[in-house]
Length: 583
Picture 1 (cartoon, rainbow, N blue to C red):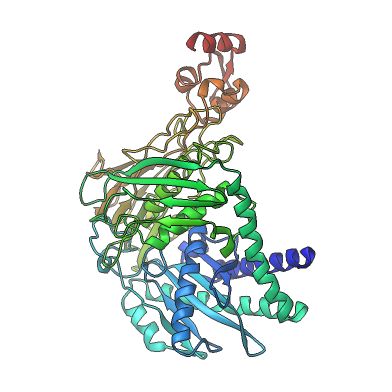
Picture 2 (cartoon, rainbow, N blue to C red):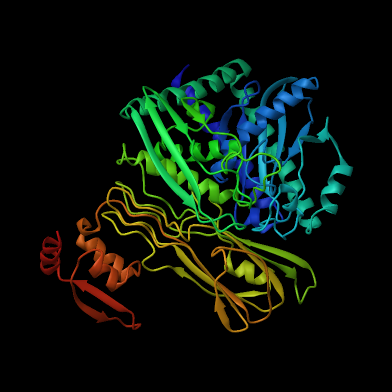
């Protein structure tokens, strides 16, 4: 295959997927898609269902598990005589695809000159999916049906004809029918953008050349990934982490992972992981595999993502654990499991390839949902706020500050937009000082935010990482843990399950305070460059106390600047001597 043609085709397919992402983000009604980018789009092989290209603006974990969904739908379509032009399938069954019920997927074939050429898929988060808790984040759910409606793989369009009865059923079972109908239309329309782009590409290169490119792209990624795995020393490496609790029973749940490297293949073994949780922190097998793929992609970022990227990775995942839950297990808090799976992969590989694997990231999505009837418009609303937080330090750099979750890239909603849509006022949104783990490369800081409501509402929180903070590696320190605080009737209190609370009634003047974890540190803190410590002090990332105690420095003076904020200057010679005396 001509490498120039291959590179141009790969770039073109990725651009088509990007355009699908942007079309959905710009056309969606709900802010969870239009503001938070909680969506994804991809192009898949027509026979194997393997990923060919993915958009850059969507959630990585969606793009990984959509391959499993597409493969299942291809099998179902073949049993029914094959895809027809104008067909479009819809589902949200987490045991078939992945994630949770709010993430609805559409799948459509692409025909060129009457022949099936590719399959496209899109995922969009619906702001409400029915169920017991507005928004779907139900910390007390004990079965999937308490979390919302389950949509099996069915045809939304059959040969171009919309199943209007199906749409009516969706609208009758969600709290935001107009918004959901608008988002569904926006999701359906992205396939027009994708089909148009693919048709233009076929016209330029021809079916035969493009078909060869699709196969070669997958084989190329497989070869590249195998070459990287072959550089890792053979052996078995293990780690254990935990969930704090499942929201129902206040008992830690172990997550155990062993990775065996042999030649150019890796084997992930989750034997010893805790059983299916009673509460909603479960996730399906496909979601766990997808989470591991996301972690591997972070460690080997230059391997183009497609089905071949993950062929060298095999799994042992015992049935019906918290990471391989089966019907009717609740899965609404699956993002907490995704975070823990990613962190355990980082933690294992940091033992053997510390040059590439980072420390743990903030590790909890900590979703806060606010719902009720708006006191001015009298319209029902649901607001969803996923955590930003700190990434783990690595050999290459300090951890990212105030980052989106690495598995999702879901942005925090615009404060101005939130205050416009919902009856609340943000009191602050700021960097959480000292939250990043100390290290030669510091973990990124988490975020602190708080809002006060000015109308009656219900607030739910679903997070983790309070009792088990994000860990450091290679001598780095752990980050600060998650922290959630309610203030009602003038009294501050923390939930019984620390970061999990379902449908807390709040009235005007009540508030919530959320403090996301930072990332773990990398390497020994007392080896950190003194200029970097001074910069962290002056930027407000660390306090003078942490600088002196953890980083072993001596602060020469505090200088009052014009706005009254203290500025710090280190005594470098004294700091060097202090560090020597502490060794």
